[in-house]
Image (tube, rainbow, N blue to C red; front, side, top):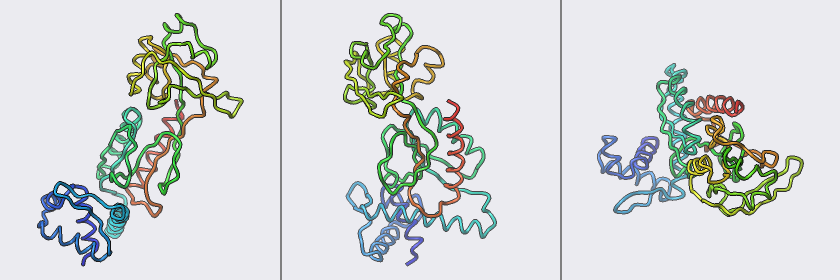
Length: 301
């Protein structure tokens, strides 16, 4: 059995979602695709895929093996290019994910510059406020904002992000500016539910470690930051979002930050990738490029 060929076929099945699709895309007969995957499973002594009439999916063992197989094939490709004298012309595909608005504001411009620098690398950028699973969703690198859970993923810190409370000048003129978090109890508020799902906002004095929570009675609760910022600009209430989510409104002075002396510690921002071995050159180049670009962007805020 040609194990590298079997790995490539397995990954093709996973990418396309089925044996027939993998056969059509690769030009390999369907019977050969099925036989190669079966031989690989027999060789490993474990089931890599679960098969139904509608689709195939990786088992837990299969997901771990597929991630390793992808890394091995990339390293083989790198080695072949080095031997052929092509080390300085990296090529291949990368799949990235980032939060929706942060990705549009910070990641997309950086990716555009990277593609111009490395014309033989292609990137698929998945913008989603849901944290996608790197292995299960076949993602090479992710941007994460906030504390990281313990995991086998490798993290590179690139900056931090403030959590701010902001309000429109007309709302502050009508109600006065709250000088302490406790004043929010009777102040009109707009709740961005994913950031503060329990209708309480957390604060921390700069000279103290303890975190205090303040209950709010939101006049409006919304599920997206864009909606919260828009409502705040209209004067519905003060809102609490991440700084980048209201940065344009702050620059245009349609919103002002308040209670800055009580902000929580800024949230860390990381680039994450799986695996601790030698990175394929396309990954290593992107990581270096992205880390430098994001650190410059985030430090300039």
